[in-house]
Amino acid sequence: MKLTEAQYELIEAYLNRELSPTDQATFEQDMAQDPALAEAVALQQQVRDSFRAIGLERKLQQARERWQVSQARESTPETIIRPMPQPLPRTSNRMYWLAAASVLLAVSLGIWLDRSQQTERTTSLAFNEAYQPDRSGDLSQSFSTDMRPRQQAQFRAIYHQYQTGNYDAVIRELKTLPADQQTIHYRNYMLGLSYLAKKEPSKAIPYLTSALKTPTRTLHQKSEWFLALAYLKNGETVNAREALQRIAGSASHPYRRLAEKVLAKF
Image 1 (spheres, helix red, strand yellow):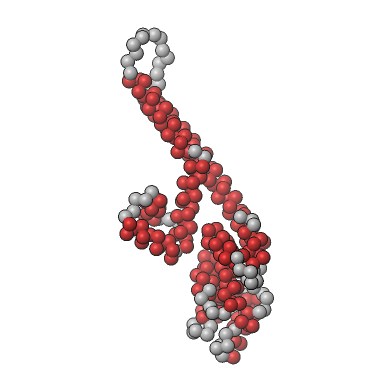
Image 2 (image 1 turned 90 degrees about the horizontal axis):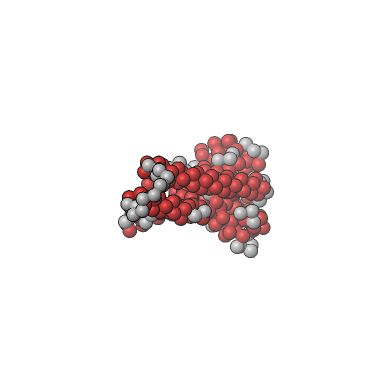
């Protein structure tokens, strides 16, 4: 998620507990409805945690205290006159402290970027090892009994297009079909699958999330699994982990073993 300056300042204010109770409640509600925003907040918190982990704040405070002591010594008259090295100008001391702070900040950012890149490599590897298009052919077995024969035939034909890798045709045809109560969940699922296969997880996520509302168990379980993979592909590790943990915690879930393998890589 690319943050605007206003969004970044709002996240900073939230993490600093500077928002009013009303604004804080509104912001938390926005996070609950916007996974990308929640991910951005979590990432910003991780940056702060990384800084704390290497003692940046403590080291900066120590550097600041040393600089303040040196300034106090400069302003205190000597009771004994003796040769002393020429003290550095105040500007030089201040520049020294700023340079030290810059070095510490650069080191901290380097560590954080290295960790971020390592996480990205891990999630990418986990996705590539776990992802397989849904070519099982059992989707038609979960069709609702309310679906008319003509609708079932349409979705079988569309599913065949998906199995052959013609994802653009699937998306094009599904978007021209009328959305009704009998087919809406299958439509959302197939759109989500197709966008994920096209490596467009940000477009797949809303459709797979909507497909979870299906009352059909098989379709719900499939949607859960591919939604978890879409989160993983999109770099939303918090949401991916939560989705995978739900799957791994269900003894009857057909993707439980796969979810456990992916979780083991985090």
